[in-house]
Image (cartoon, rainbow, N blue to C red; front, top):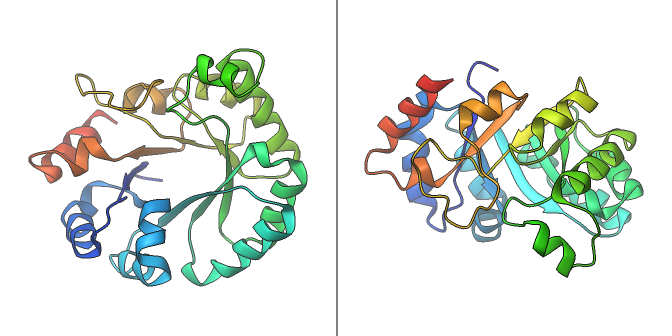
Length: 224
């Protein structure tokens, strides 16, 4: 992948998302479309962004009983996404069924621990241990289930990459040096994540909310 940056286009206005995507397409490697975008625009919106000509990462974080997740995977074949996410906490059977139902060429990656969470949040949800341990447990489960890789923060990607040599690793919650962290609690720079083994770098607000999104994308690209 020549440019590992996937721009997060989680915007309620489809025309605005298309305009932004068209402006920065020469300086990113793909587009990440999340739950907000998909609920607002559905398959039509995905198709419209795909027409710009870059791969689509459909970040739906599917988490349900295995049969339902498999049916959902079949339903999104039409969108022809390059990457789709499920939650590793859905269990091995759910992940196995998701992978089996995926279209050829679509990578299925499992979300380990959201980058908006920290260890205090884990404790409140009844999970023992620290964030690193939780990510490593779920990454191992995803690997055993036959998935292509996982989503994890930049704090864990080096360790996960060491454990899973040929895995595909998506790192969100990235912030260029000097950027505000916002609602993200476990962040690193794009360069650090890439050096530590990230396959895909998901970046949203540092580009989409910049005064000059094209220059912001170019500046990030230049660090890689």
